[in-house]
Length: 234
Image (cartoon, rainbow, N blue to C red; front, side):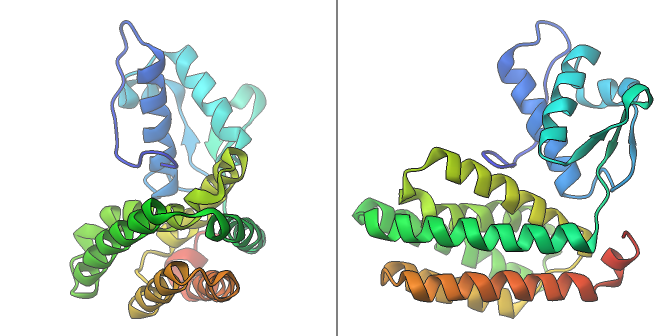
């Protein structure tokens, strides 16, 4: 999901790097969206059939996901989806604020007209999806997941730090996993936050944008911790 959030299918025969990456993204997406619930066992044979991939390639993918703390390796007992906890949620929230705030400062200082244009386009797409969600069209949730990241990524894209953006992407998705487990869209408040962040970005107001991000993330945490669908999973 970090680079491409659409599901893709690999092949069993003639499996190549492109196919392996597609399955990696698909399995990762299933964890983040909650299709594979926290604590669930990942049975290799069943996963091999589900994702059309060899056992050896599947093991490599699962090992990559352990590095992001999305999967736990249990020695001889195999793999399971990492559990969730209030502590991890708070840690991810703090880390996201630190990384995104730093990236904002770099990006706002270096951004050009093309960067501004990408922010306008990303916010336009995000706002369109959010209007549908506010109208009750929950089928647009997956579109919102994609557009939300594209908007936040556009804002920090001019930071020109591949390592920073890769780490932010990973933390963003792991934080998003908690939102998806909470099972509800935060509504007009999150739409208003995005509009304010959009305005601060075009004004190159880094301090103002950082304050919005801090509040945006904290309100997200508060929303998640009030949701019964999430509380029963920890």
